[in-house]
Length: 274
DNA sequence: GCCAACGTTGGC
DNA sequence: GCCAACGTTGGC
Image (cartoon, rainbow, N blue to C red; front, side):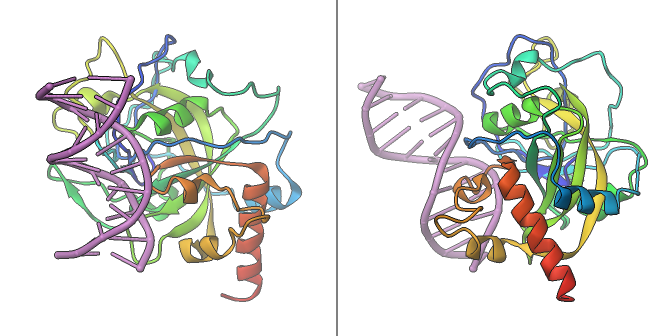
């Protein structure tokens, strides 16, 4: 689901033992490392405010596609597979991650391409508006990068993610979505017709996964990549943000401080009438 | 296991 | 369309 999610492709790691889940189509995934995320309990006030403000739109619709960059790209296709609980994501997904405390909420940033781009005859475009129009949880499939995959597997219900528009005129954070379903097997991996098809992956051995997300808010203004770059001086909250350290990673980690700072930037821009 | 060649992402 | 960053592939 991530809008045009792109996934980066990479295959590297093998799937954990757990079960699998996810699938997302279009997203691009990237890989990279991540920095630590902080946990805290819940969202900060600022976050909450923002989040709540609009969380009204619930959407649930068939799935859109996201962007995923990369080796495979992932965009979401439309089939959504919302079903399944049958494929649960590997537990191990989260492995690798420092343990999260009970009730801890984590934050993420997922990229999608808002502009049309044809991949294997299919448009992988997926903007925040596309997500907002969904009436059902969207599968963020198509991610084909191991670092991105690990981030997807570490996501838990209740986590929040920034929706980032990439590969467009004004790249930047455009809104917020919530993780409403943990990663399931990304079935687009073995669909030859999918833009995210991975010939090396079979249904016997799921390798890619995708969580379910829902739209929560669209900022009135875009917190642009340009702004984020200006805001990442050493010693500042965004100094180590993974988005800028691993610029090609389509699904990155966002610490609580980074989250709060970006929310603040969005609020300031809004207040300034930008 | 090293590393050169090559492919992708994605900003500009 | 260019190019930097970075990942993958495959020879050795």
